[in-house]
Image 1 (cartoon, rainbow, N blue to C red):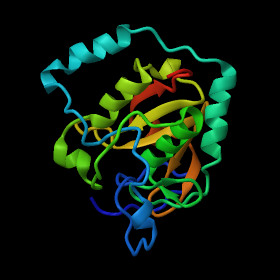
Image 2: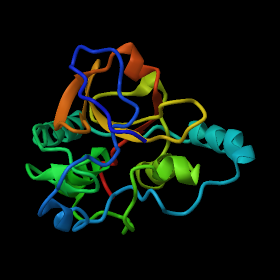
Image 3: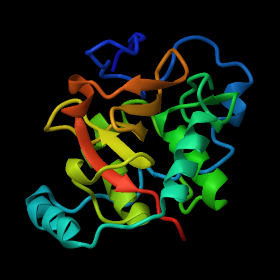
Image 4: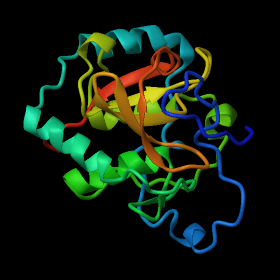
Length: 213
C-alpha cells in the first residue's frame, strides 16, 4: 500500500492507508515499537472459512450486548483523549512517543486493565491484504465480546474500519462522541476526527470495552 496523506478533521475522504508504515527514519522509535504486545494480533489464529461468515455473524448478533457503566465509558474516552498528539509510528504503542491505530487501542487497554491479553509477532503494513483474514475483528471478538450494531454504539466503543467490503478490517479507533472518534492518523498524530459519512460507511465492526476482565 502507498503512504497516506493527512485528512483535515472536516474532510470527507479517509485515506485507505492509515496503518501503513510511515516513510523516513524512525530512529530510536524503531527499537521501542514492539516493547508492549498488541491487544489485537494481526497474525493470530486464522479466521474460519469465508463460507462460515454468515453463521458466525449471526452468532455474534445473538449474543447479549455487553453493558458497562456510564462512568466506565467516560473513562475510556478520557483515556483515549490523553493520547491525542502522540506521533504516528507503525507498531508502536507509547503515549507521547509513538503509536499506530492498533497501538492506541493497546495503550488504552493497558491504562484501563493492565496487561494485554495477547502476545503478537511483528506485523507489516500490508498484513491484511497479504493474509486475507479478518484478524482484527476476530481478535476483537475474543477480547471485547459480542459485535454491536450501529444503533447500539456509544462513546467509548471500539470501531473497526475496512476500505472496501471485500477487504478485512484495517483501521481502528475509539468513538468519543456521537459523531466523533479518536484514532492514529498515518504521517500525522493521534487525532479526534468527525465521523463523517465516508468514515461511517466504512465501519466494519463495533465492540464495547469490557468493564471487567
